[in-house]
Length: 206
Image (tube, rainbow, N blue to C red; front, side):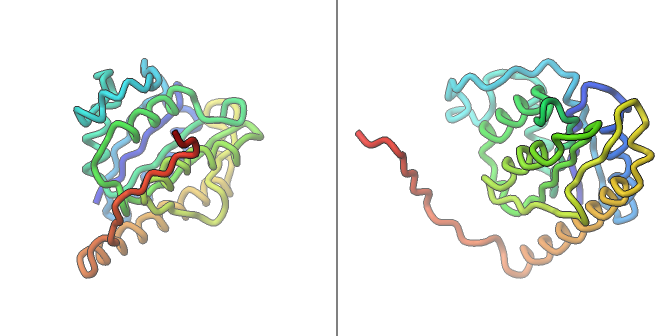
């Protein structure tokens, strides 16, 4: 099994990496492979609603987003990790996720998702909710922990002193491992849930 981790921080080996490293240690114990991609320092523009992906199955801007797409399709779980800027995730990560989730047409049902947020003090809950919405719109179960998945620290390495936050990361990784393994067994025995044909209902009628 494999988990893809997107690091939305522009800082290499910063406090967001502290959270990711804590997760990765547990995944290794659970015999689950991890791959981390540093996204926050990439040149990734936002979606322009051109509709090209509806025809080609990939984004018109051939950058890191299309590279991530194939990795995402091959994984059992996805973790989104971000620092908090003005009670929101890093804008580069959001631009990446908007295009990634909209342009990819493969079935994401029952891939497990989790988000992790890092802040000096406030804004974690809003950012946590923002990132989780990418999972819940496409049939991805969200792994939980003993608390909301946040870690605190300002200067580089400060997050290593947040004992409860680190424990939350470890619990999250164990719960996510259990959920992915349980879903794999369920898919083998029962298959995926039945899907209905999509019934788009717009609020403005002509």
